[in-house]
Image (cartoon, rainbow, N blue to C red; front, side, top):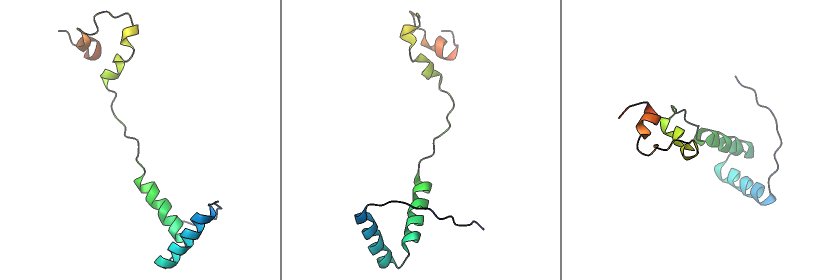
Amino acid sequence: MSSNVATNIRLPEEVLKALKYKAIEEKKSVNQLIREAIERALVIAPQPERQAKDPFQDVIGIARSGIKDGSTKHDRYLYGKKK
């Protein structure tokens, strides 16, 4: 079982007032509303996706690499294929 830890937050007066009214309407405590909002935010927050490196990313800066035939032989430079 996890234990609760106390913390302090600072809210604008208007936000706290609205939060208290909402707590009364929903018959919940202010603490419960805050916990629920934080839990929703953590679940919804997008997680960065791990993607395989795309060889096309190696094209970035190719114009400064001295390669003169990058537009015609890009497959060779990207994928190692000969045309």
